[in-house]
Length: 221
Image 1 (cartoon, one colour):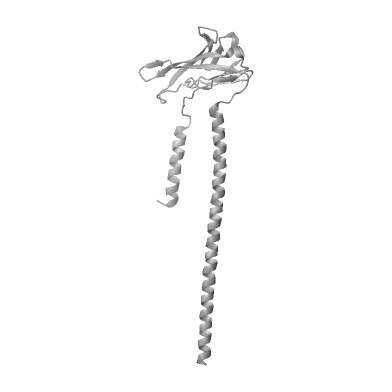
Image 2 (cartoon, rainbow, N blue to C red):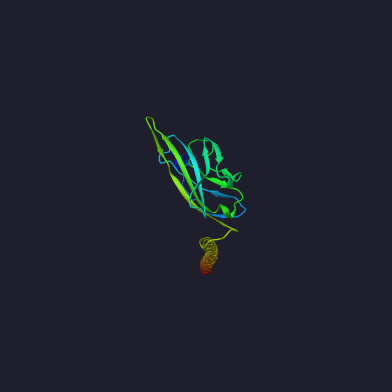
């Protein structure tokens, strides 16, 4: 195998692995802090354990306000058709999940013009049917999200600490680069001085040898 083939083989394997991983489902927790008068995404992802098994699913959302004791039906999505059930959210909800397929794994929705009355507990419920060759299996995974509404964006302590650490790391790297540059400059300068001293010593040795040769020729004459 040539050197070029040895180089291309790992690259081809990486591309193949990337293509296999493309479109993989990852369950990520939803954000929970919405800003009043802005849009907000309620994330709800339920991944299948067996991706090769075909399935069909519908998604239902339920909502319970801060001063309410029971959940009310909020939203239903099935066969690429959506219906807003709760009149408080009419014309303010949009599907933000899986599109172009009945095999739903992302059941997220997007709320327009969030109000303080939208704060509360949301429940996302999948009704999934796995279609095996000889039978069907139904599951109902669900997720609960407690959403709060704030008048403006707030920054958490973790975000502030992350930003501070980022700047500290940048400054530390710059200082380290300056120290490395100074060290390398001094090393190069010292090597240059040593080379000059060696050249001067060689020149003096050659000159001394030439002088001795000239003196020997004069004596011989």
